[in-house]
Length: 273
Length: 273
Image 1 (cartoon, each protein chain N blue to C red):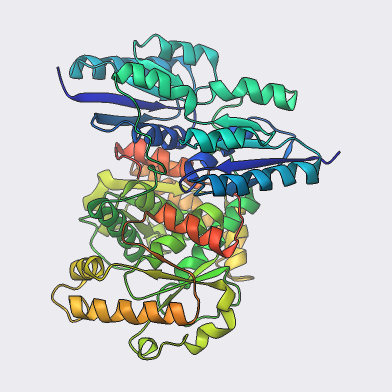
Image 2: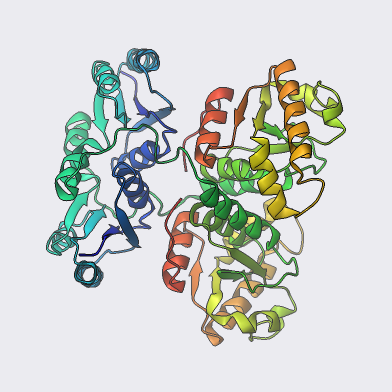
């Protein structure tokens, strides 16, 4: 018997919500070799038939019962998945009944809604935040007046991905301020940042990790030397402490976790797109 | 009675998974004014106590029973939420039992795992893909040899956010090719793209929408005129058709949906981060 356990995320929309839930669910069961596959846009019997065929084939190939995690609203399509022989989990089914009773109304059964049609206003806010993050990235001299927050850190500590994530998922205008050698000569905030104290959040990182990241980028440079990284990180940490800037280490932290902590700390409340 | 129905996403981790599920669930009940709030990192009794207080206050303020959607693993903390008086939905609970039976093992109850600790390799792949997207964005003359895919479209049709999304969530190296006036003079692929035919995906957009987006960016320019947009979009669509490049209209399509369709069409299979 193969060690691989096939898992399918099946959806009548993008499948992203289902994959998010499924991914979280699978992390709670370690020691298995899950082989995951997304089957999006399954919104009629033909596509369901194709999906069932793929699910069955995977089960036969790996001699292991597949797990299907799905969000199919159409009962006919959902029933077809159930006949695949897989363990079939409908991610919304358990919550529909209590929600319907609580709200006193039936759910609407349009498919693929969570990441489907978008209004112009929403799209626009999202794209504008993204453009903001990209044009306010790494040392480009621009005004921070319109920024919702400014991430401050030495080069390669995780500022850019966090800013882009915050823009893309929360429409937050997140700017970057990369600390230069000159900034790090004193333990005071760079002059440009002083007016924006309440928007600042500092990122720090383990110097060994930083050296490893910089080494990939500019091999054998002074920039990537462990000594350089140690000095820069230590100076930045002193500055954050002296100026009481909230900080977080990115060393073992995912982009999602950094983003979530930054929002919580600075009191930025936004709905996810 | 207020029209507002308070909804809380409570998690022992970032709360991002819970918010994703909750957001999808709420879109299935239209006509309500849900006011949502995320309460992340609720991993002990003190934080649970604070969360319960906030939930109760919101219920009293809006004279409306709150809805709590959570992923708390610790049974003590979960029970505290249950005593808030809110409708409490545990997003994983219904699936744990069938998964445990299927896999013949108990779930691990470490908290905050889905977006928690990350290994260097994973982080690195993600950041590298992101850097790739940013350095292969809009007309920068680079090689496409290492690209997993190349989005082709006229300016402002949605290439950049899609590339960044694919990098951030799937580690896909997505490059951009913006079609220039010169490219659009013929209905053949630009020479630079011919070697990469199987990596190409075309985006198109309604010319009115494009004009609206460009107008925000460069008001009253020729670039933003409806005539210009109509001509460019029509020429691009002819090229995609002549060259049999798969295409998608971004007009009413979310970034998630574009990303999902591009991956499916080009057969790019990656696990979500």
